[in-house]
Amino acid sequence: MEHDIRTLTARLLATRALPRNDRLVRRALVDESFRGELERRLEAVGLQLLDNPYAAHVSVGLTAEMHEPVFGAGREYAASNLGLTRDEVALLVIIWSLIVLPKRERQVTRQDLANEGQEDMFGTDKPVEHGDGVSAGLSEASLIADFGARLGGKTKVRNFMLGKLARLGFIERRQGVIHEGPLLDVLLDYRVMADRVISGTLAEVLAGAGRVLPDRNAFDVAQDADDEDAGDIDD
Image 1: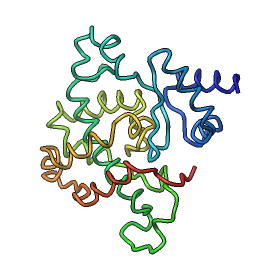
Image 2: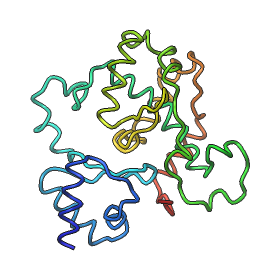
Image 3: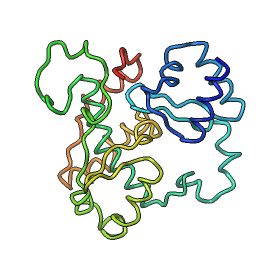
Image 4: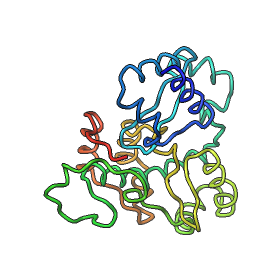
């Protein structure tokens, strides 16, 4: 076990995110003693394992008591500890809202993209899905047309902001389409973000651009599901 613990800890620190179906990650998710030792070693250096059962990856982050000692001295911490500007944070939240919120609704109702909206009497017995089967992409051109002017200009969004979010692992860009990156769902806390988006001003901004978010009932169902065990995970 010692070698596997050291290997997984080093890989998490080096890569920041690992897929849930990775052999050692799977062991950490099902082996209580292995996970306990992993968490103990991370905690010893001020870190914690970030595991959202609806996310396709796991990651590591600072424990709450280490936020101020690590980031408090930098002025940029008020906006982002990743060096993101306010415009970049705003773009990140918009992308999260348009990818993760609909994805979570599909996951909770056990719908995939191919059968979205169809009734399935056995849906609740299906495992939670991850990946492209449940996470839809966004057209870059459409996103920039809708929000580019609000975020400093279309050229800035296309050539700089999206590239930075991709380098940080929040998104992936493939042939003009923005896809969920390994950190998008695991680093942004759904419990905190969803209510603020759906009940806040951003929902009005998105609606004005013709972007439809899940309704309030869907959000409540997803919140209830997040507060319980996610059940069988399909890795």
